[in-house]
Figure 1 (cartoon, rainbow, N blue to C red):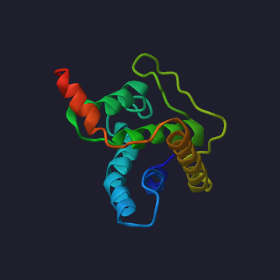
Figure 2 (figure 1 turned 45 degrees about the horizontal axis):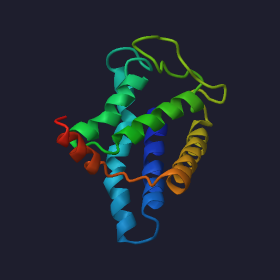
Figure 3 (figure 1 turned 45 degrees about the vertical axis):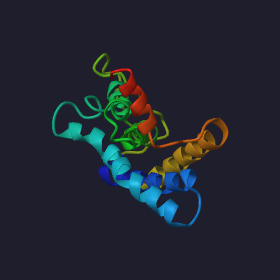
Figure 4 (figure 1 turned 180 degrees about the horizontal axis):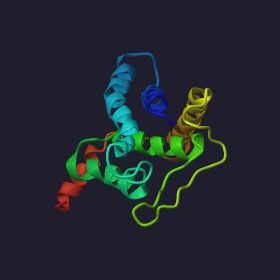
Length: 166
């Protein structure tokens, strides 16, 4: 996907996640949406920084990079929602784009993708982005409803890690 698609994905995800975590049309929902929008959009854009250095869809499009963003809020108590943007960026590139990404870089340069994607310049790119975002939101809703509550505040985990001297 292109940068426009990743921004669209991040904005729609933040809006949808705000309603999933804090359902309603009130100040609490608006606050939740406002709290997660910038980090999710920044996370959605971060992997494409590798267009300026390294190798695009390899250097910053891998599971080790995602692991760093998952661990960051546990150890440092901030950047709680950036991992969501990074993860969904990967999903968009794997499912929505023809090329795919090198999930195991730097260990392997093999790119993984699905035949469902379109080229980044396709006139259908925005439509594919919206469809994939809706599927991602449905997955987040199902996890939140049936598996465990998506408590996007990881401060308790960060405090626990600090208790272990991390």
